[in-house]
Image (cartoon, rainbow, N blue to C red; front, side):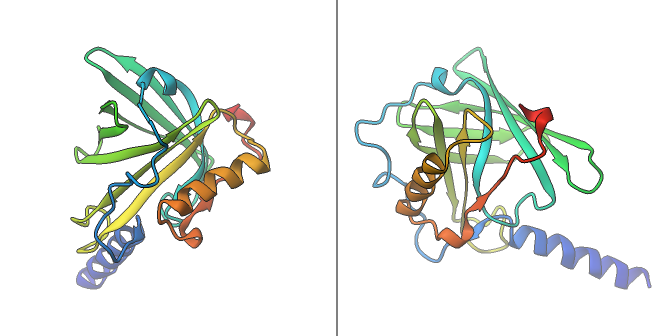
Length: 194
């Protein structure tokens, strides 16, 4: 009986990892072709609160809503991030946190403190209203043995206009993301996030 339970837990754990990023069958892109022209990243521009409006993949963080990120500056060009969201069933808040360092071309070297594994993101656009950060991993950190894309489109406001959401989605699609992988996180009923 114990062995059956253990096998069941391994299968569930594996399924969660398999769907933790959108599968990608080609060589991982650098996202240079879809990065805004003459792009220079200044980390001061992303300090404060942001709401993930679009995210990849659909299954990652399933069952959570009302996500909000807080980006704050630390010494040595390091940014700390705190992420809060609510479990839809239990209504309990979850917090994740970590740090990242950035380069002028928009590359972010990120580490979630709880998990102790590094990730590298590329900011492909950084506008006053939003920014988009994407990652592609060949090594299968999230999907076992496969490569995949992971990312967010962050907005300064929890309820951006439909036009702005369409603009963010077009940008992600131009970066090679299949539109069926892009999840729109609706902030309805999230007054505690505003």
